[in-house]
Image 1 (spheres, rainbow, N blue to C red):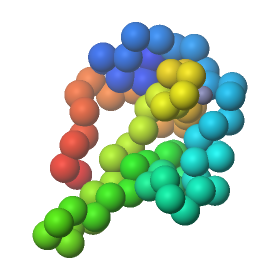
Image 2 (image 1 turned 90 degrees about the horizontal axis):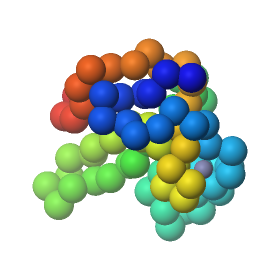
Image 3 (image 1 turned 180 degrees about the vertical axis):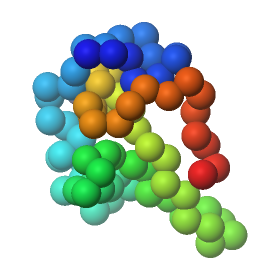
Image 4 (image 1 turned 135 degrees about the vertical axis):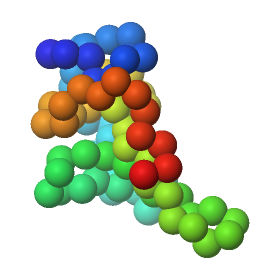
Length: 79
Ligand SMILES: [Zn+2]
């Protein structure tokens, strides 16, 4: 597996399944896009702006959490 970003330190996949547990917990702002097969942090800022931050690595084990998105050369923050 290729590293998902230029700054990733591993290409080892996540096998702990913790991200799915986070999605099931309404107190944790992690969502899953079933169509694109990606996990995001879903946050609404103090000004009401909704921000989705694509996650590349599992919070718990640090493994890569997706395989369908091609590698990118820089973060896409703000898109
Ligand atoms: Zn994991």
